[in-house]
Amino acid sequence: MAKQIECKSAGINCPFMLRTESDDELVSFAQQHVKKMHKKDMSKQDVLKMAKTV
Ligand SMILES: [Zn+2]
Image (tube, rainbow, N blue to C red; front, side):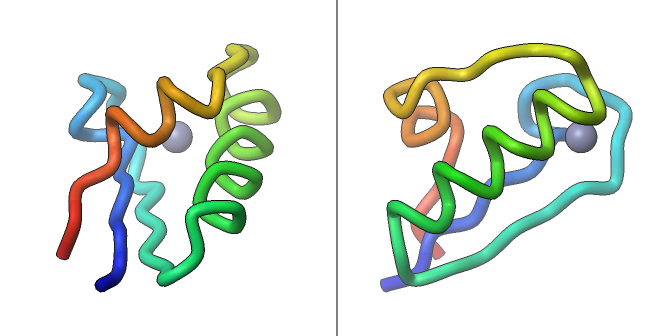
């Protein structure tokens, strides 16, 4: 099953959306995006909590 993460679901006005089968990929891409675009750090747990299974 794939997981999906969106900035929108964290209340951020941003079109970023990522869907992947790999938790590691999800976490690393989301962390990179959030750091680069939003100057925030997210832990692995934060990312996984924000993701939904699709
Ligand atoms: Zn974003």
